[in-house]
Length: 274
Image (cartoon, rainbow, N blue to C red; front, top):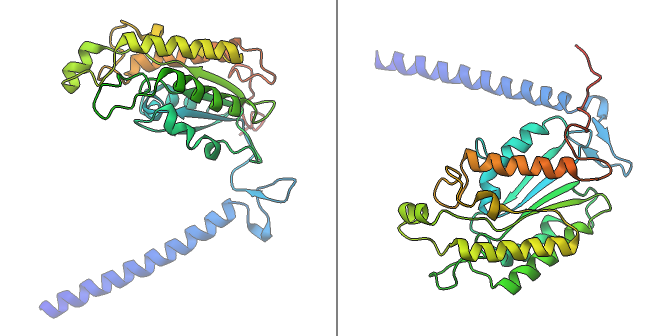
């Protein structure tokens, strides 16, 4: 009886394996066909002969920064809201790194934004400052001295601006924090204070003015606002809505050609009817 049960199980397993292998083969063929490889053809061919898997090419937006950027693509985050808003208009790439400061960013920015790339972003949203502005006395903190912070941001911003004539840049300043909430959540303020954050924010705004780059003042936008932080420094849904709306305003008011205002950009395949 035990042998019969074992034989039945083995038969079922072998049938399942055969069915699975057949399904995989069918799916591979379907995927190959969906990617436009019938008769050796691809969906999109560039002029240089290289092929795209997904096309046509949309404008590219890149979000580059530390945790406020990394977490922006969480549910209800400002990055997720931008992705939804531009869902048929632009592709949004996340380059956010939790715990990073501008010194760390300086080590990799040329890899993230290579000048010899065939396609450059249409818009970069660039943020560092919350970690840089931490008190240098905080143990193992991410502080970067103010002068160095400004120069790091200047180097990276100038590099991004020079990627192409049509690459646009928006900077986000160092933000405010909720010092009481930080202590309640972490047991200390993580070296963050509104006094230090304001100094770094003002330096970032001044840099943006020098470079002709729009800067969103996150310090004034978030200072003493209720319910904008989940832990005293990272954003809630309400905090992200503030950032999202300010980004929309900056983009809509910018006199960029071509415009990156979602209201003025065409929907992809808008002429295709059912």
